[in-house]
Image (cartoon, rainbow, N blue to C red):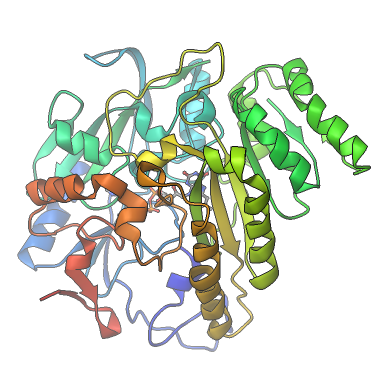
Length: 469
Ligand SMILES: Cc1cc2nc3c(=O)[nH]c(=O)nc-3n(C[C@H](O)[C@H](O)[C@H](O)COP(=O)(O)OP(=O)(O)OC[C@H]3O[C@@H](n4cnc5c(N)ncnc54)[C@H](O)[C@@H]3O)c2cc1C
């Protein structure tokens, strides 16, 4: 959980602080269940209903306080509902062939490994320890294979769920269709809880660079060839993945190399090729199963449409420079091509229409603005960094927002203080999602901050969760 939420409340307590400082549970949940079976889910739901408490689900880790439980809520920890099973001959109207059935607690690294052992690939996050089956996929889910297969939510065949009134059902494109639509990209922790069936894909490379201008100029061409690229405005390497062979990658990078040479910019370029995606994932996202991504930092960000990269990239870079000069945030980027519009390939279509934020289909970049939490500084330091994210970074990036359906921010990697989060995270789907929430959880048994209908409840002083009005 982000440091901001670990330490929130009237008596902030740093878990890494001096041992003599007394910590209290305070605002955090005082009731939690380490869920290990569907029966325990049923029993927890009964308890919550009987005692009129909200349920907050926690799986792995996240940045926005969505799994940070409030006092008086019942926290369900699903991490140990971990299982990955290959179904060799899954049959449905939308897919006939292999499928992966993943338990609610399964981490991306386990799913990638099991897929690999069966000659398959799956859209998991860059961070191997992100839980793949729920928060990640419900929020959309981007990763190294996004330019090859789209979003993780696009690959969902069905969801096995326990609903607020205790029904144990399958939601798929042919049964309980609206629920399936909403779960696939429409937000987290709000409709019901459990397992997922995923359509896998049937079964690459790294570079170093420095000057962002040259890089941004060449980026559109790389996206058009199906690359997914991760980079940061730091001294970090740029990584580009998703191109089939080392020779192809060398060809693609030739214009960038000659541009850097012309500018007399020094760089180191490494092109490597692995025999399969799992080896690549293990090499660059490992050590598996956890990976090396930090969890504590503050987050912000926004989806930047392709048109900004094509037509206004210099102004975009000026914004990036301004942010890094005026705040203590640094910027990471994932460049991707969800629609797989590269020439000569047939895009892998989503299994069915879903609630993934439409802005993803227009995006060339998801900006991951981050500010490192300093555990040795007073909490005021963290609060001022969070303010910088909301007051400076967000508005500056907004200048590069798209229009209409291209507007949006990734609900899993964004600023938790965003004011117009309903539009930013859910876009035109908001009203339909509210209808699904009303149909499947009218009493609001499941609650997640920034989730659909979460604004009907308010966290009061001392962390009490009270109904508004
Ligand atoms: C270090 C780090 C790296 C990340 N890297 C990536 C990345 O590469 N790509 C990417 O797309 N995202 C990434 N994320 C964001 C990630 O997608 C979210 O944190 C996501 O919420 C994790 O999913 P989870 O299942 O572990 O849910 P949690 O984070 O535990 O919970 C998040 C929300 O999901 C809900 N939820 C969880 N399980 C269930 C369930 N069984 N039923 C109903 N609701 C449930 C919770 O109620 C909560 O609202 C990263 C996050 C971190 C912290």
